[in-house]
Length: 128
Image 1 (cartoon, rainbow, N blue to C red):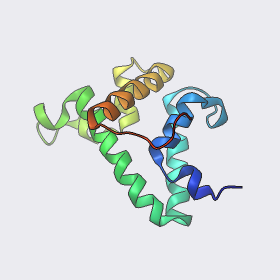
Image 2 (image 1 turned 180 degrees about the horizontal axis):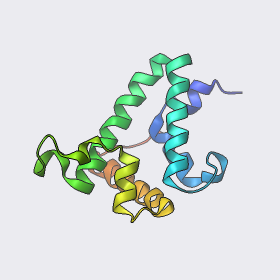
Image 3 (image 1 turned 60 degrees about the vertical axis):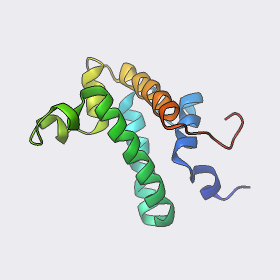
Image 4 (image 1 turned 45 degrees about the horizontal axis):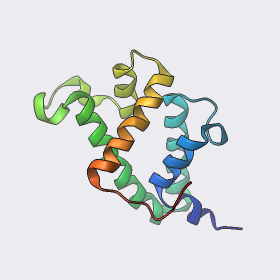
């Protein structure tokens, strides 16, 4: 049996696992379920694994910034007091998907693929 830290110690690997088998982790394939799962995970990190939390939080924060810029160019084109900056990434994904949770879920994974390619992120695992 693996230590739970080995299984979820890499947030990007966990995101890939969710993408391949969402029914194992989420109530349904929508951005609300994904957001709830990730929020719960980070609460678990905060309480029981703070060493993992900071590393994975930084990775996820960079991904969120990428998605926000990709969808709305927040930092580049809008003034600092723009209300879009107050939105969470899942809310921006919903706005870009006509408030369709499943379309926003799929858009998240499309942008996640782009992010990894653009950043040149390679994984140590062969196939999830």
